[in-house]
Length: 306
Image (tube, rainbow, N blue to C red; front, side):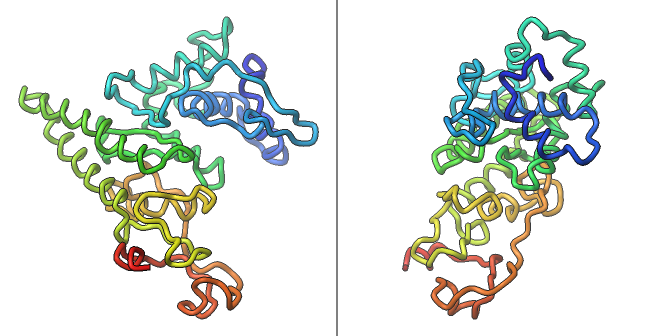
């Protein structure tokens, strides 16, 4: 872990403060691999890397990884739209973070820390990264894994803080559209499994189009905001938090896992009533009688009418 501490130190400090009282095998290696993915390819910056500082934790300077960060917060696992597969890009990033200390043995050691020693980076990204990420950050993930439900199909990791309407449109029509065209060409050439990949990708595209539009049940509901300030379509307010904004991706039709919608794994996110009662001046007091209801859907007509 010390070999790349200057670049990945925020994650390691998080590990030290979060897990000092419980056993967590090979945590430093685990966090190093995860941080390279989150910080590097997906372009996420820890608060201290944006100029913030805290007691005994001064702001950090450049870590040298920005040049390898994705420019739109969309990292596709297969090769799509001229971009290399995510696993190849991650190897390049790890090599940059470790410098001269990077070796094949080091890669195997990192994979061992996440339980994928003999399976490879691609398999870890496809099958385990998102679940591990959700659990580490208390089921409030800031990297979302969207897929079509088919092993070997379309799959992409999205940086939540950059996932605005325009970015989701780019995923839906540019990246996914390119994948569909290539699979259609493969199907015409008689390639095994290509037609199945086309069907799965088109199904995912239909669900993403519905999330973009935001008609219920693909809408976002924020109890603290009046009707006229509810988001129209996929135009989330990041300050409303992952819990509320992730709902359309989970209420979409399941592509594979029950309750996970178009996500690779279902984080433990619920929208049942919160404890306590709202004050009478709260926007939805008259509707819910003070109950802190979150599992509520609004149609586009209602929102536009307001």
